[in-house]
Length: 148
Image 1: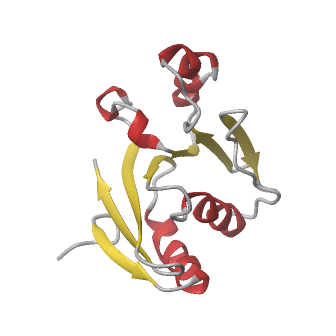
Image 2: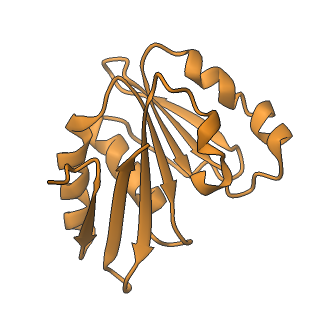
């Protein structure tokens, strides 16, 4: 039987997407990497904003131009948000401080356009979850999650 961390879900609207994340988040470890991929407009940034809202973080934006933004809630829980869409090469990734993020004891690291990374180089001592978004219609999405 698949768990929410290894499954497929169809969400038909924003409320269902929010409900999905509310159910999903309690299953994450203190050191977790969410590797999001999917076409433009498939729901990656919207999902990051919903996750941040559930964690008590506000004013979350897409870090498309900065590559990396960091957020913290009132309790000190951190979320690092990366968008690799404009990533040109490994030097861009290195200059963003990407590899330094894994020295943290606790963090949720969310990477949009993660398909631009080689997952084999990610640290094994972090929970790693691939989240793929597929746009089925203007409002409907298929979300596939997989522990890697």
